[in-house]
Amino acid sequence: MDSLKRAIRFQNLDAKSGFAWFWGIMSSIDIVSYFLHSSFVKMPVRFGFGINDGNTRMLSVAGANLWPITIFFIIYSYVMYYEIFPVAINFSVTRKDFYKSVIIDNLKVTFLFATIQSILMKIDIYVLSLLNKTPMVDFKVVNSETDNIILMILSLFIVFLTITSIFNLLATLNYKFGWKIWVIIGLIFVGPLWLIGDKTNLIINWVLTTRVNTMQFVYLAFLTIIMYIILYVIIKDISVKNKIG
Amino acid sequence: MIEIKNLSKSYGKTKVLTDINLTLEENKIYGLLGRNGVGKTTLINLISNQIKADTGKILIDDEEIFENSKAMENVCLVKEKGIPVDNDRVKRIFRIASILYKDWDEDYKDFLVREFKVDVNKRYNKLSRGNQTLVGLIIGLASRSKLTIFDEPSLGLDAAVRYKFYNILLEDVQSNPRTIIISTHLIDEVTNLFEEVIILKDEKVFLKDEVTKLLEKGYFLNGKEDKILPIVKNKNIIHKEQFGSSIIIGLYDTLSQEEKQLLKKNNVEISSIPLQKLFVYLTENSVKEGN
Figure 1 (cartoon, chains in turn blue, yellow):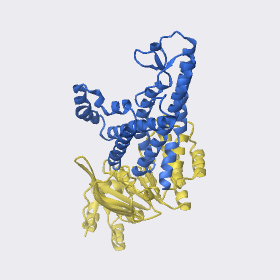
Figure 2 (spheres, one colour):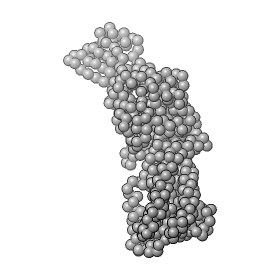
Figure 3 (cartoon, chains in turn blue, yellow):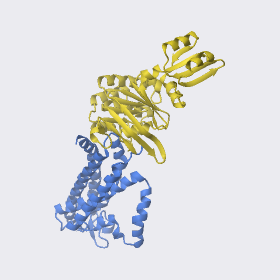
Figure 4 (tube, rainbow over the protein chains, first blue to last red):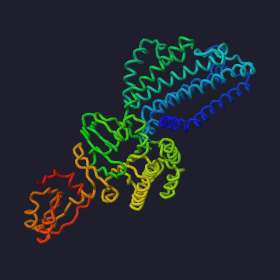
């Protein structure tokens, strides 16, 4: 147990600064966006800072954070295996303890991100209304107007966690098998689906665009558990690759 | 106590270690020797859980080491290739080590940083090779792990710093006994450090013995060929150099007092073979077993 605690403390070492940097930048961008929208009243929404709902004049500034957050989780997953894993194993952490610490870290980070993002999306509605803009509230996975804050947090949490679990697995496969894994994924999964032209079948697309209700929550939770189980099977005897600074 | 039982490891079709069996006692300093590519680093990586063995097992105090947190918290590996960090500052690397090693001694780390004059504010990848090695050595020493492994601990270090490290290591092991494994090519420098030597050859443990016993069996005999060979013809000759009618024979065997006296009477000069040369001869030649 002590060794797991040490592994978790190691994971936490830079978490605060990484967290502060990301949200510092995102909140600064959001504030500047609100300021620009308040200063340039006639600015067409499609050229606005934030996201808009296609041809309508609905706008969301905080909603635009969703893509950077998704990209953050992809990078976070890759850093976990390409940077943190070799250091942890080098310093005598077992793969099992590392794996457990990853899950705990993933749960913590995704929940915190979901909480902050939900609050920002709720605030977004009021700020944009004050600026005489029509706020965009339907983000497919959640509706910031009709969903209460708890539901939004839980919905975004499970979506973020599922994305993170998928990219954790991809990153581990990538670390173990190198570039070959992309060829396999391309040949088996992405290529055929793309050729069929039904992009909705892509898992990521499904995760990011399907409304989170009870069943979807269960599906995503199940998918996340499957991802973490496969992750353990891969990570339990993975060898450390030499990478020197 | 560390027990290695029937350990084998291959990379693809290349066998590196085959059926390794070893017992390492507590609180001893071991030298792990072998030619390049013989599997020293692989053995070290197996002991420290960096890679998984194909077959066999490694036990520390009867606990299998692979994926065993209780066993692994007593192991510290200082890699030849450095620490796998990108551009972290040295102080952050020490911070990671202080979190992950349960017996970490922060005061001792501070002492070593001062002693070796390491700039902790510099980024690791901006350090010279010697200073990168020093960061690893400081971690190995300050970890106070029951089993500390140094893989080529002298890379990039000048002689003065190397000797300082050897002295500090000896002092520290005396006050904080633990098992140390050192894999190095600078054998003569560390002969006095080692208590036992393990030599790997042809995928296997070729030899494991106490240094004093090993050195007692290594002799150079320098004299006339016809005066030496009749006496040592049934001995284990590991080296031979001919200079006209004179010859230098490297012997890895026991010599009785009578044999020594006879050799001296025949004007044969007897001297010890330094460990490094003994290692070279032993790993170079097929040893001819004496009777």
